Amino acid sequence: VTRQIKDLRTPIICVMGHVDHGKTSMLDKIRGTTVTDIEAGEITQHIGATEVPLYTIESLCKGVLPGNIEVPGLLFIDTPGHHAFTTLRSRGGALSDLAVLVIDIIDGFQPQTDEALKILKQYKTPFIIAANKIDRIPGWRVNPSFSFTKTFESQPDNVKNALDNRIYDLAGKLSAYGFSADRYDRIRDFTRTIGIVPISARTGEGIPDLLMVLVGLAQKFLEKNLKLHVTGPGVGTVLEVKEDKGLGYSIDTIIYDGEIRTGDTIVIGGKEKPIVTKVRALLKPMPNRELRIVEKFDHVDRVTASAGVKILASDLDKAMAGSHLRVAREGMLNALIKEIESEIERAKIVTDETGIIVKADTIGSLEAIVSELRSLKIPIAQAEVGDISKKDIIEAETINDPLHRVVLGFNVKLLPDAKEHMLESDVRIFNRNVIYRLIDDYADWEETQKK
Ligand code: GDP
Ligand code: MG
Image (cartoon, rainbow, N blue to C red; front, side, top):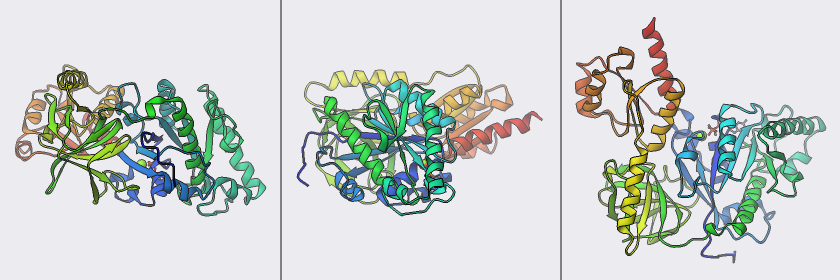
């Protein structure tokens, strides 16, 4: 491969779709691992980043890739529902350049499919549809890993018709949003018509076509968008703050613009104030491995956008997941501190006078839970990123309504002093690692208390 053009940024591709429609399975198929097996409740709750280099795409596409591809690969972000898409913001708008909306072809449009479309329309993000689970169409003949066009040819006529009818259905639903859509192999201009790529994340059928369309779209998009080039000091988003044995505190980040080097001074959002620190080490996951599950890292001197990278530095214990990260080169520091300060201010979630207390691990998950509670008209007294402490329980005890004398925790620890205090308190604590379950369990409990 002799297409190494150094200053091209890897496009970020957000994978969206209704729960269980196959987002994680699709990425698993692409990278050949099984992240699904280890996920809490089988639902993706954390944002993962998967870098798929061009050579992987080439080998999967078995020679059908056009020869003029210059993008270095694709960076996929697997999101829990649509929330992360809106939380993972860049300076200009959405963080992702392109999106794949996964729709179960048997199950069809579902509430999160609608929500995802609304968001994509609002952010004007180019996208394609992965019509997943074609192997579940009655009578489907499986040809593992075949391209869609090849496997389609080998199907009996009634199966071909059944598939096409379902695709017409999807296209019809999309037209209600003002999008014209068609099966991808019938489209000439992908900037006018949304491509629907039939795939099976289970059998691998259609995966080559999906990657081919994505790379082609990224390439087109890149020709028009200068922002796809790597320039200047790095800008990124903090996905997760972690404490690892032997490593101390580190942050998992997505760098979406520019470059970051070891020794760079960075400014990131902290729980109270901006954190200014020096990059001690940059750890890149091996290609095709997901940032959050990887054990083995490459130590690197510099990372260019777009990439998922783990950063080691001091003072990261108070770093706030979901906040921005900026590399400060000469003369920039004060302005960047001001910028991050105002971001922290904006991230404070305005809450009601009385209500429940919510603690979560990231700004993104906190926002997701708060918006869910708001839609259920459940009042919130306090919503914060952080573990459940004794202070939270004491705060909850002051709430008059016993139905709201509650602390909801998402992916957080119950600190020892809180555990102790709980024994002599009537405050209920719900601590879960699946958002839907957390809210359902609380709502169920509230129902039984009312009786
Ligand atoms: P996500 O919630 O969108 O990430 O969905 P998952 O990837 O976790 O998949 C949900 C369920 O659908 C799992 O049980 C998968 O094994 C199953 N599944 C995903 N893709 C396919 C497919 O192409 N065919 C079939 N038959 N099952 C699939
Ligand atoms: Mg998933």
